[in-house]
Every structure is written in structure tokens, then in C-alpha cells.
Length: 265
Image (cartoon, rainbow, N blue to C red; front, side, top):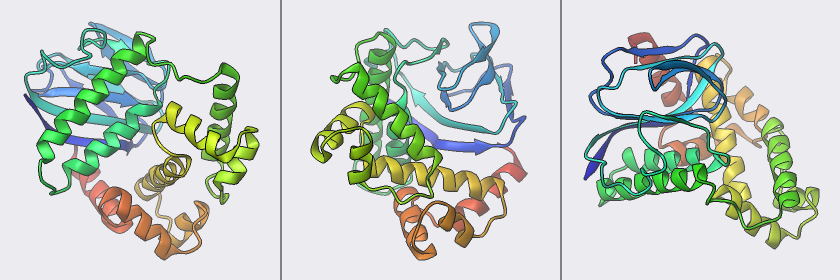
């Protein structure tokens, strides 16, 4: 039995942000980095590429630094993980680079929403979702989680996803995205979910909210400017969607982030 103690998905920090814990942390620490970092793993300082991840045991020395603005997922949890499925391949204190990492933030996002909620069986569901994370990581690093679609289709989807994420101000539709990769809408929806673990629209919304978090944290842009840059028809729509995904308003998120950075992590 283990328990999630704190969690954040796609959490932003400024360039130069570092964690240095020579004696480690008293809890297990899971980290997934969206960008390259310098990190201590297995006693060596390593330059890790984007989407590297690691699970530190309690007491293992922790150090990383990001030379650029950082975005990362992180979880602290306590208890006994010795019987958790998936840890035979995804072992603690080792740095991994999953070949298909897109599912990681999605699961952490779901765990974060559950963690800050008040619904029944919260801790039980968090444990189940965390087990899913480690099982998926184990499959990914062992090469057993390949999507059941052709390589060409997967590559077209990856290019499309990159284009969509780099132009979030465009008002994308499923019809347009499917046309871009020469698939019917139903086939596109099915293949997209099989690879990324979410729907095209859900993925787009989450990408917009992740970008909004970065803008709220790192700039003084107004909500109107941010919502327009992300393709929302109105600021009110942006606020509603941000609250639906994160459980808080954009203003509350900005305030919490700045209080946190001023007071230290």
C-alpha cells in the first residue's frame, strides 16, 4: 500500500531551476522532464534528453538543474512499492527514456485532478492510477507498448500533433486534423486514442491548458491576451475550460504559482 502525498503535472519553473537534496527525500519521488536537464542518476551527473524520467527511492541523493525554462511532472508518495507491478522493468534510481512517452503526463494529470478532489475512494483510485503509470512505463521501456498501427500512420500523427501543438491559436477541428493525415474521422479518432491514450480534442484542450499555465506562470499577460493566443472565442470560455481541467481559475493558478516560487519549493 502506498499513498500519493503531492503531485503536479506539466509544472513550470524558470531557467536555472534546480533541486539539490544530498540526503534525498523522505518519500519516493517520480520525475518526468519535458525538456533536457542535467541530473544525478546512479551516482553520475548525466545530461538527460527531453522526456527522461526517474523514480528516486527515499534517501537516494537527488540533483537536477534545467538551463532553460523547465516543464516537468512530479509525484511524491509514501509507503511500500515493492509489490507494485511494472517495477521489474522500470526500476527505481535509474534514468529511463521511454520511446513512447506521451501517456505519462495524461496519467499524472488524471492523478492530480483526483488528488485535489474530494470524491469517494480518492486514495484507492490514486493507487490504481499510479500502478497504471508504472505498468505503462515498464511496457514502454521494454518495447511491449507499441501501438497497433502502421509506422507511416504513426509518423504522420506525430507530425500532425507537433503542428497542432505549435499552432494552438488555430481553431482545429477533428475533421481538419483527420484530413491532414488522410484518415476518416472515425479511424483518426480510434488510432489517435490508441497511440496517445486520449481523444484528439481532449489532447488539444490539455495542450492549451498546459500552455496557458506556462503563460500565467512566466508572464504578466492578461487573461484576454492568453485566451486569444490559444484560439478561444472568449475569455469566459477560456476560464471555464481552465477551471474544468485544473479545478481552479487562471487567476488562482497564477497566484498559487507566484506564492510558491517566492516561498521556495
